[in-house]
Amino acid sequence: MPSRTEAVLLHIRDNIAFARQIVGERSAVDFEHDRIAFYAATRCLEIISEACRRLPEGLTARHPTIDWRSIRAAGNIYRHEYEGVEERIVWTTVRDFLGDLDAAITTELVRLEQEL
Image (cartoon, rainbow, N blue to C red; front, top):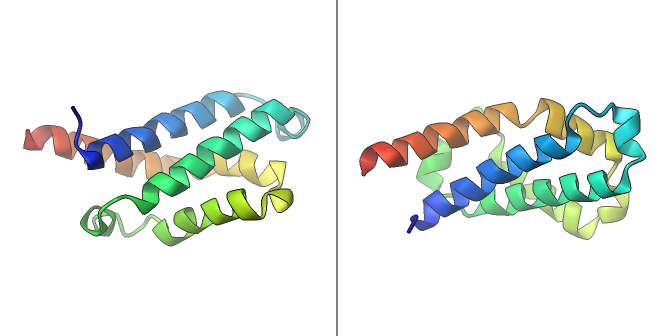
């Protein structure tokens, strides 16, 4: 059974992969017109945001180039200001801004595996 931290890291990793799969090779215009894809990708980003809130401070401190505060805060927008979430921003976030987070999560999963 994975540790709590490992489970959180896996949730982040899996939702990054799922968001990328949802967006896929769609153009921004195609994504803007696909409500199901928009909702699904937004939900992935919401889960990523919430999961990042659950990471230990020491882990996030090892990755100072990641804007943890913004990632965590984004969930509030997805949940409470949902009417203002723009399709283009979700599309851009998934396409252009999850790479560094994905790399940090992968690094931490490898680190946990090596500790076993």
